[in-house]
Each structure stands twice: as structure tokens, then as C-alpha cells.
Image (cartoon, rainbow, N blue to C red):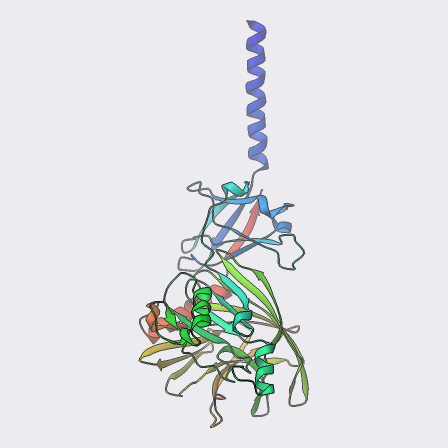
Length: 392
């Protein structure tokens, strides 16, 4: 009996020691919000190097306050088959911090969430590239659409402007709208409970297309030439676009970009690599010129609030501090070339800005004042992001 008791005590001590060692080896991150409002839809990016793990597919993030696993999304940025970062959106109260435990989990243990952040190449509608989240949707146009215009073939589009798809539901609409369009050409231009595409782009900048200003003129690229989807999922969609070199009054401009759209945001993030210029101008089409251009130099945003087919529509561009140089309204009699422009600084051949919109039918914002308050808040968020430290 004495030997048996010693054996049981030994097992108990080993279990306690093992538990202590596991506790000592537990990793955690501290996420801090230094702003005076709650953050709920800011995406935190964690790399394998930061977490010191080899496989992000087995990483779980657990809220230590309620023991709940967070919705996450892993991203292979360079397409080499290895996940480079893991994303999650913590809920952090104003001027506070929270601790999240980094745990190892199986695929079956991961929380399930709908893939509301989605994008894809659309060969069935020439060669659009379209993207959306639970609040907004956009599209741009490819080389086939450009060639159709250049060859005089009906149905093409020659534009590097960004189109806004006016949705008023939270679920994805891209595939449904293109399916309707395949059955009846132009079906998504008609009003429906999901919204409609009645935002005209033409050769304008749409919602955030870029130009290079030389003297008093603006020069733009043609359609994108290459694309690559990077990720889709519950928290983010992102993709890569490349453009043929273009001329800006004698300057050769080389342009490519990564565009991303996160859950809960009205703004796509444009990370543009550009050579041949120290500044760019991101534009908002003025359509009928019956709206209100407004800007805030201190907060780095430009906005256009306009009547839109018996509704109202707000578009905007926001850039981080040190990037936003100013803005102007460019008014011309040439069709679709009147735009409000945000002038942005290029640093080391890169410029980052955000562009998006709000439609009154979506019921997200009541009026121009609410929209511009959102712009101020969004500006604070991108200039003062969540602080993340590793706690081991």
C-alpha cells in the first residue's frame, strides 16, 4: 500500500509540474486601444515571426476574459503556399487593453463565420474584378474591356476609375448580380431589395482612382493588365492589380497596387507602388456637379456628398498623416473629367490611402454630418492603430 501511495503521489506531482510548465510556456498578446472610443472593426495582423510559431494554421486566439476563441483568417500574401499572417478583430473598449492567449487548435475547433469579405475575377462580364464586404462593393475593369473600346466592339469599358456597387444588404451580392446580368443584360442596373449599380464611372476617377497632375492637367492610366487574388474570408479580401506603363506629360509612370477591404469598413485600402512621380492625386467623380465637396486637412480626408437618383451618396478619400497634402476641385466641360482630387505624397515609391462610400439606402448613415463624423473617426483609427505586444 505504501508503494502504491508513493506511485500515485509521483503521478500527481508530475501532472502538476507538467501543468506549471505549460502555463509558463503559454503565449499571450496584449492589445491596447489608446483612443477615446471603442474599437470593434479594426483588423490586427500577426505574423508567424512575431508570434514565433511555424504554422499559423494551428494558431487560435482566445479571449482571456470569457475564454472564447476569436474568429481568425490566415493569409498567404506572396502565394507560396505558406501562411504569412493571421488576422482577427478584437473588441477593445476606449483607453483600455485586453489580453488574448495564443493557443494551438485543430481545424475543427476554429470558430465558424461567413465569408463576407469576397472578391474575384469575372470573366463572364468581360474581365471585371469585383470586391465587397458586409457594407460596400466595388469593381474595376480589365484589358479585354479596354481592347473592345479600342477595336470599336460594343460593350467595352476604357477606365482605370473605381466603380461603386450600391448594396443595401450585409450578405454577398456579387455572384447573384452577375448571374442576373447573364440572364438579362444590365439587370443589376435595376433597383432591387439588394441595391443596384447606377453609379456612373466612365473615364472619371470614380471612387479613388488615381491620376498624376502636371501643370494644370491630370493624366491617368488605362485598365489594369494583370490580377491576382490574395485572400477572401470572414475578415478581409485583398488582391493585386498591375497596369501597363503610362505617360504623364512626358513622365513614364509604373503602377501596381494591392487593394484590401475589411469586415465592417466602408473603405478599401489602396497600397500603391508607383514609380515616376513624387505625388499622385486620388479622385472622386463629381457626376452632375450638384453635390458638396468638403475636406479636412488636419484629419486628412476629402469628401463629396451628392444627390443620387432621389437618394444621397457620399464618397471619400482618407490618407494617413504625412501623406495627405491637400485637395482641390477640378471642374471641366469635358465629359466625366470633373473630379475632386486629394493630393498625396509618394514615399519610397509607395503611397497608402483609403477610399469608399456610403449610400443613404443602406441606412448606415443618416446624413452628410454623420458621414463626415465617421471620416474623422476613421482618420483617428488609421493614425492611431491598436498597439500589440507579445507577452510570454
